[in-house]
Length: 412
Image 1 (cartoon, one colour):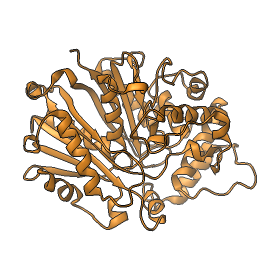
Image 2 (image 1 turned 90 degrees about the vertical axis):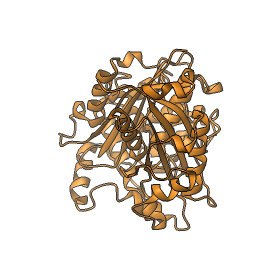
Image 3 (image 1 turned 180 degrees about the vertical axis):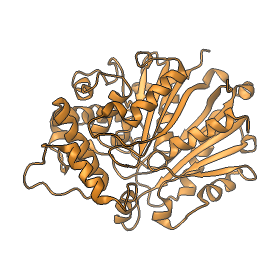
């Protein structure tokens, strides 16, 4: 059996719009915070995994962003692996750090994710994101989205979405409405819940509460989605220091969090409505088996809600509610703080922000903080087990990549 892995330090910038800060600067803040949180120095780190999904598109820096960002921080002379895996880049970096430790190639490693998406040319963000699907098979992908929608169509007069991924999420929302009878109001309930959570997160990009009716009245993006249901363009960075059990004595073990499972998966060909074969559902099944726990054991979840329908779909895939009832769960208050299974207490991507190369590690930051009991007014009482789901790209009828991670509080 491979050796156990623990998260012993986390750091994260505030996500938002930072016109005067670079990827290097954002990375420095996150790394220094994670090292300080762990109580270690850069010289103790034996391997680093650095994720950024779109830096090349934004500022022309390709191939070695990790080396350039990390060597000035004292992280030189060690293996530095650059990771690009669409919106799942940061969780992939975390996965690779876990694998490096479990393989016995290092005792202490760091995963870092950073992205600066605001640029002088705002069209660059859409150009970068539009490359996260098969650009050689656009007609086939659009035909697949039409199959997802079925007979669910936008009202006349709706403007076409500017972003490829908003078009994708709109099709997924239409499919959910067609299969299960879910409603735009239920999607709005998810967004209103997350905006309410974000008020208590000092690192969130947006911290304004919305009612369900205010969400529904927001500017349309792609029917049935409105602006408050969608993640913004963001800048930010996050980092996590991990170690093997053999090195745990070097840290404050009472604040460590065990990685019970970290599963990375890619999609496969399937029929449009074969949701039981969704890559996240399959990855979650493996994660629960690896961790030796069940969905009912989970205390808190951070899921990939680039739009509100994303949360609806993913909590169903994770088994946190019955299939087709993700929106109903939000309407009933089951997924809010104090509810049966709090989801996205950070505010989620919709409010916390979505700097795509940092997003997955932002989720890890939140779960580690929750499991330590350090989240103040957004704390999930008695949190013991947390689960994160981070997806990226789009291929065929689902995400191209997904990572599911189960974390556990270590008893003092």
